[in-house]
Image (cartoon, rainbow, N blue to C red):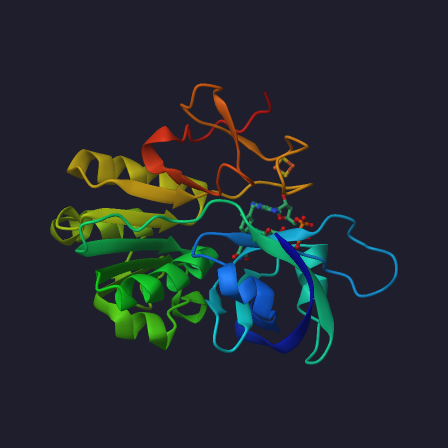
Length: 267
Ligand SMILES: Cc1cc2nc3c(=O)[nH]c(=O)nc-3n(C[C@H](O)[C@H](O)[C@H](O)COP(=O)(O)OP(=O)(O)OC[C@H]3O[C@@H](n4cnc5c(N)ncnc54)[C@H](O)[C@@H]3O)c2cc1C
Ligand code: FES
């Protein structure tokens, strides 16, 4: 785990309310894996406000250039302030943290399943998997074409690229789960699936993958405080022996079958 005063290379609004932040931080770029995350300080003054750093998954990490990238949706004060950071300013960044995705052998077709900004960690995973020879089928859901986060790099590495929008402006008219149901034959051919998005969509996607016998991993979100396993502020229900797991250290990526969705009450 490294703490770095990372200089902003760019912080661009790629879709309404959604920003791509690129930072220089060679030490973190060397070791950040797909599915891992960093804690970012979202204020620039002497007083940290908001006090807690905000967790964001790596959208990319490049050992050669020393850059790390985050794709984030503006939700509240922290991300709002982050969106105002300009080129040359520094963002105090701690990472890499948590357990990321595991690409399972044999090398074969895999499914990338993302709702909204959930594509952030999966875009990084898809690039790494592609370089290792995996065949990639991407399933992407969004409200409309204007919010669909389909970066050209992801399209390039995907053998199959399927989209659904609620209003039908791009791809299937419907949600991510309906898209998966429509493309079930393709999904069934995949050796594993990697899922990130709104909880209800993840739950339905896990259920479908399980029915099809496709092992899957999910990246969970939770409110975080310490980020290192000490405060228990981020626990989620799982089927592991303790019944609860820490999203920050035991996740954020979990085997889809061990997550008890819809029950994030504290232990
Ligand atoms: C491991 C991890 C990785 C993440 N990766 C990304 C990422 O790559 N891109 C991205 O856009 N976001 C990501 N998030 C979510 C991101 O951390 C939150 O959106 C952010 O902390 C919100 O901070 P804020 O100060 O802007 O909003 P706040 O003022 O803290 O909250 C604003 C509103 O958003 C809700 N909210 C806050 N955090 C979450 C959350 N985690 N899930 C659901 N609702 C929430 C609050 O309940 C509130 O209603 C990740 C979260 C985790 C735990
Ligand atoms: S955020 Fe403190 S234990 Fe996970």
